[in-house]
Length: 248
Ligand SMILES: C[S@@+](CC[C@H](N)C(=O)[O-])C[C@H]1O[C@@H](n2cnc3c(N)ncnc32)[C@H](O)[C@@H]1O
Image: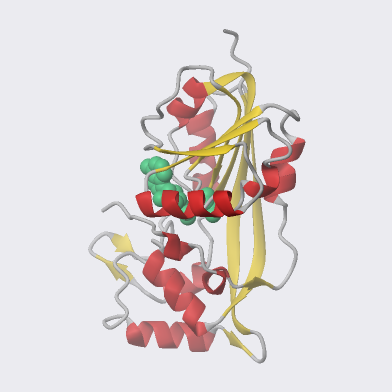
């Protein structure tokens, strides 16, 4: 079953607040790996709030998303800002509506992407930067929701970290000349309401149902509740950087 996001995803309650510094700053990663004045494609841009801080670095930014609801939120946010060089297009990451060799940098932040499509639309010498959920993200919490007929209900629990990282090297190495992947972990504090939103509006637990899963939910929240700061969960992301050294 494919999962559809709506702009409800973009709530500060659901994002929680970080207890310690993240292992990387994604805005800085994108800026330091791309030329000022070049072009950027962001796949699965959501509400585009991560693109606004990049607008002065790039000459033009194109965001694509499959969700009409996300696109309308993105356009609202862009219209409210002073930024003039971001355009948002409705598209599926599997079939990007762009000519070959169109963009200097391609990013994808926590969305779906197709490696062959990225390799097609990126210019020679272009940079790919992808932040993706790691397989150990909120692992201990997700494990408490058990298994269904398809295995663990928690997203990506079936992978070991080594297999997971290797699967991305295997996917990207044939298409790009230089692929580097780093892993990062940090703690985030959530409220019970924030966790509930996270489970309802993201694919974290397959077929999460607020009523049927209520007991698991309460047990999981109680187990990870810290004294003052709410529910503390370990986040895990991977950061992929690849360079397209293909000659035209
Ligand atoms: C978790 S949200 C991330 C949004 C944004 N990149 C961010 O980091 O805040 C995932 C986004 O990817 C979009 N998405 C999911 N599948 C997609 C696809 N096949 N093609 C384009 N966008 C997709 C969703 O609609 C959603 O906006």
